[in-house]
Length: 95
Ligand SMILES: [Cu+2]
Image (tube, rainbow, N blue to C red; front, side):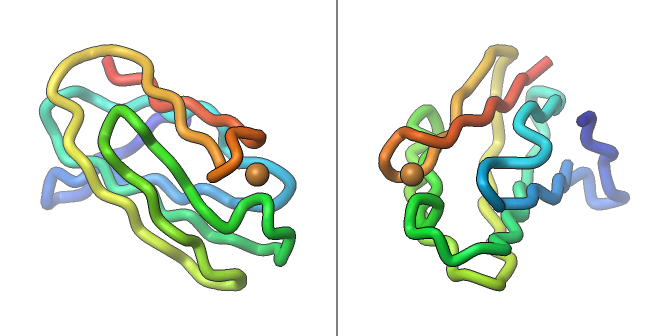
């Protein structure tokens, strides 16, 4: 899924968290802020944390709620995100 920049320049992408991440591959442009909005629609404890090591992110995701995670990728590359246990996987592809 490719992000469409808002007028403010933030690339906002909704991600459903339920048995995994949907979409699990996100494409964004380098040099502009990214906001991933995780919508966790399950109570399985597996997905209660989101970790994006390359951007120093570790956040808890309350069940039944949306949680926004923001960062700005400065250069092209691929960055993995996972649940706190490293079982669920997704990727941010920066172009
Ligand atoms: Cu997990």
